[in-house]
Length: 337
Image 1 (cartoon, rainbow, N blue to C red):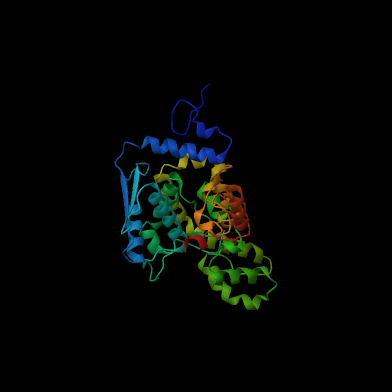
Image 2: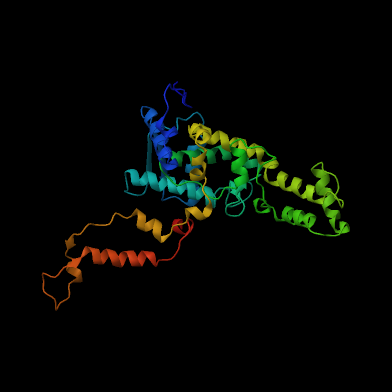
């Protein structure tokens, strides 16, 4: 019996059966882009001569459009720069994800820099800003992440495991919420007071919060239960609309069948923040080292040496490897300054 696939075809797609999740990602992306090859090209143009706000507005405007075939061929241009080709596409995709992480220089909600996600690394959750919801910014974020993924751009690191759990259909009750997932420091302090042996008299300010959430007042027996309810509300319940809009943005890019049927690729799309750090070993693995070829470097010849002396490539490669191995550890943010 032939297994039915998420795409509705009568054969098992290769991306669904390969053991390596990274290979599955690549195969799925190539299949999806191939299916959209005859669609009208998508043109993403950024004028680097303009200020940061205008550049960010161009990115937002591009991804804010509805009814777009995101698998269509992509052509990025940097106005004010002579660069062309696939390198420009990679640069723009990297810029899109970096802005999504660090914030857009747009005033949405009376702030100079708008962050769609907030919180500490590996515990980012959607912002509860109504203005971001009204401007469909979480769908924009989903499209940005999905589009970058399709074009082999950066993933989006640091999203809270609790948000990922709910995003892909997990129940609210089983979401792995932690105190680090709560970006509101006042709510954090409230939760910690409930968890500690704080006198009930000192919990009076918390009564109003409990009342606003339709929860009973704290007492000697319900403190732990209350702290869990308040935390769940702060992280999950008040961000459910944002999560739904974010999911829709991912679905718009055509990525959803892969994410649903290959759960092992989710950590690739949403890695831990520490996994995106640039380490010396990552750099070394990306270098194609020369074979045993001897070359001449005129500028390195010693005046006292014979003109025929050469510097062996292996020796130079060894120096470079040592330099990289002893180099400083850089985070994703530091490489995008």
